[in-house]
Image 1 (spheres, rainbow, N blue to C red):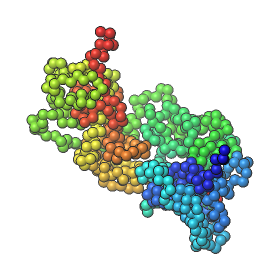
Image 2 (image 1 turned 180 degrees about the vertical axis):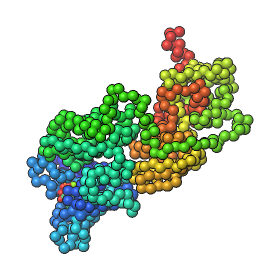
Image 3 (image 1 turned 45 degrees about the vertical axis):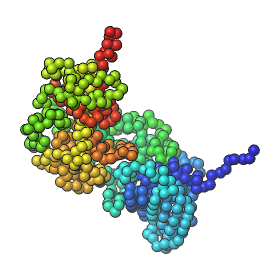
Image 4 (image 1 turned 135 degrees about the vertical axis):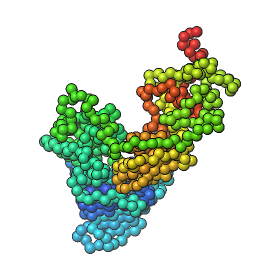
Length: 613
Ligand code: ADP
Ligand code: MG
C-alpha cells in the first residue's frame, strides 16, 4: 500500500486557519487595531472603503518594525509577544498567537509600511495571498500602516457570503467602538468612503463614552469605582430611568479587552432589581482589572469570552458595587416597600424629548362619496377604521378559502353569506378571548384569529404598498421633533432615507448626532416615533439578507410590528369586526409577516369530534 498522507502546503494551511480568524471585514479591523495598541500607538487611524470589502487600512504611530520583522510578521506563529508557554499565563498584550497577519494575508492583498523611531527609512512590503511580491525601502512616518485590499479575493464563496455594506459597517463600528472605549487615552479616527465617522481625542473615560454615544449620554452616567485585592471595577452604569427596551449599551472590559459574559451581565441586572420597568435593559460600561494570571483568554481567537478563576467572588463584588453606587447617587428608591406608585412620573412622560402640542390630523383618504363609488370595502387603517357598514361584505372572505388547500373544502357559492343569517351579521358574531384572540363564527364552524398577528399582516401590506408606490401619507408635526442617535445609526437612517420618505417620514435635518423629523406616516403616533425607529435599527442590525431581501420589506415588517395592536389590548366589537374584515381583504391573510399562522379554523366536524358527537 502506498502512503497517502501529505502535509498541506503552507498557503493552504494558512487559508484554512484564516477561516477561523478572518470571518468578515470587522475581524480584520479588530486584529489590526489590537496590533497597533500592542505596538504602543498613541494615535490610530482607520480608513475603510465599501464597508472594508475594498479597503481596510490602519495607520498607527507605534514602535514600527525592523525590515526583518516586517517580512517575518506574515509568517504563521510569528509573534514578538510571547516567548514561551509561561508567558501565556501572564499576558499583557492583545495578540499572542502570531496568527492574525498570516491569516489576513492568506485571503487578501496587503501593503505594509513601517518604520522604527530611530531609523532613517522604513520598509514597504506587498504581500498577495501570503506571497511577498515586493519589498523596498520607503520614506514613511514613524509607526506602521497596514492596508488590506480585496478581502477574500481568492475565496469568492466567502466574499459572496458577506452581508450588505450597512451590516458589515455596523460590525466594524462595533469593533471600533469596543477598542476605542477600552483605550480612551489613545486618539482614534475613523473614515468610511472618505467621510469622517469618528474623530476621538485622547480623553478621560467619561468623555470618550460621551463622544461615542452622543452628548445626551453624559447626564445618564452613574460612576462606579471599587478597588479590592483581587479586583478593580471602574466605569459607569446608566441611571435606571434611561434603561432601554432594546439593545442597552452593555460593555464589559476585562484588563482593557472587550468581553462578553452572561454571568457578569446577570450580576449587573441583579443589582438593578426592582429599578427597571418590565422588559427594560440597563446600559453599562464596566472596566474590570484582575491579575493577568487569574484569567484565561486563550479560548478562541475570535471569541470574546474569558474564564475567571474566582467567578463567584467577582459576581458578588460587582453586584454589591453597582447597588451601592446606585444608592449613593440617589437613584435607588430608599423606601421602595411603601412608595406610592401614583406619585411616580410616568416613564413615557419623563422620556419625552419635546413636549407635544395638540395637532390636527386630517385623513387625506377621506372621500364622502366613497361608499357609493365602491362596493368592496377598501383596506382601512386600523386606527381610523371604516366601520360604518355593519354588513360584512362576503367578497372579502373569499381569500379565507382560496388559501386553504389543506382544509376540508367547504366551498359555498360565492353569493351565499358566510354567516348563517342576516341576524348573526347584524349582531356581529365576534368575541374577544383573553384579549388575545378573536373568535368569529363562520358557516363551516369558527375561526380563531390572533389579534396582534392579524393586525401586523394588515399594516405590513399597507406599509409595503405605500413604500413601494411612494404613496405614504404624512402627518405634519406642528413642532418638528429632534431625536438623538449614535452616529452610525444616523448613517443607517440616512442610507434608507428615501424608503422612509416613501413611507411618509419627513426629515427636516440630519446632524452627526440627531435627526429632526417634521412629519411621520399617518399610522404612527408622535409619541412612538423614537421607539419605532429604534426598533427599525435593531431589525436592520439583525438582518439576515437572502436573495429576496429588500429594505422596503424589512421596514414594512418592522413598522407593522411596532405599531400593531398587542396582546392584552381590549377591542370593541367594532374594532374586532374591522380587524377581521381588513385581514381577509389582505392579499395573504393566512400568515403574519414573521411567518406565523394568523388564524385557525375549527370546523363543525372537528368540534363534533371533541364532543364525540
Ligand atoms: P500577534 O499579534 O498575535 O503577535 P500578528 O499576526 O497579529 O500576531 O502580528 C505578528 C507580529 O507582527 C506581532 O507580534 C508584532 O511583532 C508585529 N506587528 C503587527 N502589527 C504591528 C504594528 N502595527 N506595529 C508594530 N508591530 C506589529
Ligand atoms: Mg495581533
